[in-house]
Image (cartoon, rainbow, N blue to C red; front, side, top):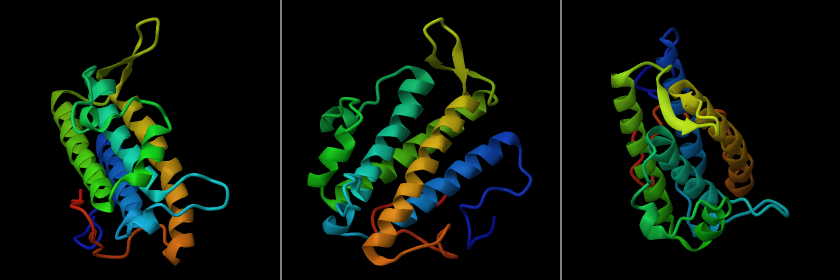
Length: 192
């Protein structure tokens, strides 16, 4: 990791450092793909798909808070979700984002990432990746923190690929990672 690439995972870190580093890299790559767009850009679609970058920003914000509260500790997500009308319905974030201002979408996402990073760091001070979390099967078998991180990595992997296609169609922005020294122009996204 260098100052020009603060999102890059360590070359030889612990398992926790590698997984958290990979997640931060995907978060930053996704944010780069969604950055600095107006309402038209955030609502742009490809073909018959209803997927938009605005919808992805709101969906991933909800997932960040859901994973780091309800799945991790078994507590409600709280605000801002309680005041936005979030119901857990898979389509709500995608549909409601169409009427949200860009500033609102960037704020939801950036705030959720900050909260999730803090909650994850706190959990890692209390134990390793094998520690049980609240999420469990019907038989009472609890998942562990490693599983939560892997599930969140999968969520980001899928949606960062969607963001690649959407952003390229909007203005031609491509690339696997942000360019060296990239910083978000919109919102308050902080580097890992």
